[in-house]
Length: 115
Image (cartoon, rainbow, N blue to C red):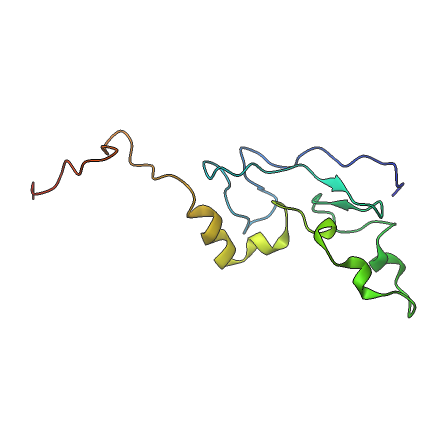
């Protein structure tokens, strides 16, 4: 991959990543799925392809310092494999507003004592 190559367009559909079966649903959570970006090593992060000619993983040798792949430039904020764990899916999906409308009053329990 050429260092000047631009990342692909956002791979989300309606704030979901349908190509990842265990990916959380970001819709109505206040978080927007962000597009892929190119880090300073020329590696596209967040494109779900995981391979790049410029990646240290593709050019590994006994002289490669593993620290080269640490830091935020290697982690995509919304298209990261870490979101696919059950705990992290629950975390993001717990931010979604309840879908009880139009049957819920925003501040009163109108069904209290009716049963």
